[in-house]
Structures are given as C-alpha cells and as structure tokens.
Image 1 (cartoon, helix red, strand yellow):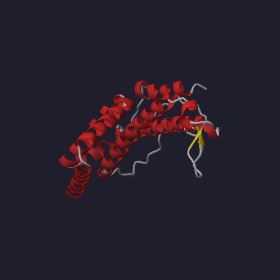
Image 2 (tube, rainbow, N blue to C red):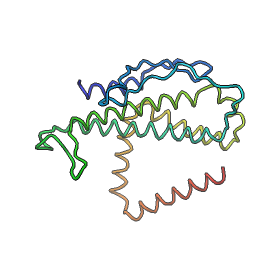
Image 3 (cartoon, one colour):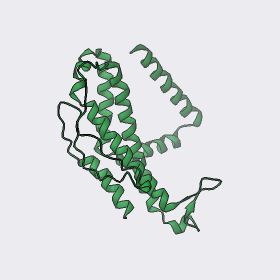
Image 4 (cartoon, rainbow, N blue to C red):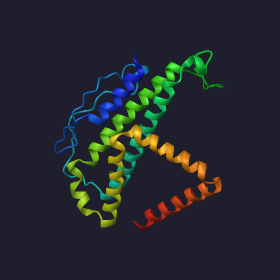
Length: 211
C-alpha cells in the first residue's frame, strides 16, 4: 500500500466529495469497509443512509454551538494530522532510526506502523467531520435555529465561518497556524504568551456565562 498516496486521497476526497442531502441528515457514503482489519481501524462500517427521527423529539438550540465547536476542532485536528503525516513521511526511516522504530520505555513503535496510525487517524477525523458538517446543515435543526437569540446565532455563524475556512484546505490551514505560532513564539516573551492565553480563556469563560 502506498501510504502517502492513500492519506492524500483521504484529504482530497474530503475536499471534493459531493454530499447528497435530504430533509433528514442522510448521507450517501462511498467508503470501502475495512473495519474488520485491525490495521485499518479508521475505516469503519458505513452507517445507514437515513435517520429515524421521531416527530416528538425537540432539538434544543443551545446544543448548536457545542456541535459547531466540535466540528471546528475536528477539522482543525484533521488539518494538523495531515500536516504531521506529510512532515513525518518526508523523513527517511534510515536516517532517524537504526532499527526502523521510534520511542522507548514501553512506547516503542515501528515507523511503518506509525505512518499507518496517522493514516487511520486522518480517515477517522475525516469521517467525523463529514458527519458533523452534515448534521449542522440538517433540516431538523431549522426550528431550533429560529429559537436562538441574536447573540447565539451570531456566535454559531462565526464558528461556521471558521469551519468553512478550514474545510477549504485543512492541511494548508494547519500549516499557516503552525507558522504563525512559530513567528509569535520568536517575537513574544514566554510570560507575555502565557498572559495572552490566560486572557483569552478568561474572555471565553465570560462569553459563555453571558450568552
């Protein structure tokens, strides 16, 4: 198996796949089921095409924001995983390891197995992102969206704008983020960087309490 080619195909499929949507959150998936192979755990069994949603279930508007944040974080994780995989596969085993393995003290792994783990992680994150993206655009959330306050609606909208930005090219987004972090780290003193992160967390907690 050409592992690098396969990982790139996962990312390309995510970027170019046409998703067929209906009034339910159904999705037609074209993923080969490799769930029975322990070495390819990222390829799980495709789920059903349609959901069974009872008319008595009420979708709560307050759950849209956490779902959107989960989607954004999943896409970001996928981007960083792709970046890590691309960087890692550029390293030749022979120049970084005399025995074809890395790690120590109970955490030793063969480099070939590590590449496969990255590939599985990327596929799993891609599948999770597909599901969450489809859910955020499902018609059954329409009534809940109408119940949101203007502030909540704006917060979800901003998160989904981030989602679309990352979704355009997760790996490129991750690499740009990494470059920005490196540039900030070179210019900013450790104490200043810590203070900025603490201030960001305080502001986020305040927004959560006042939403």
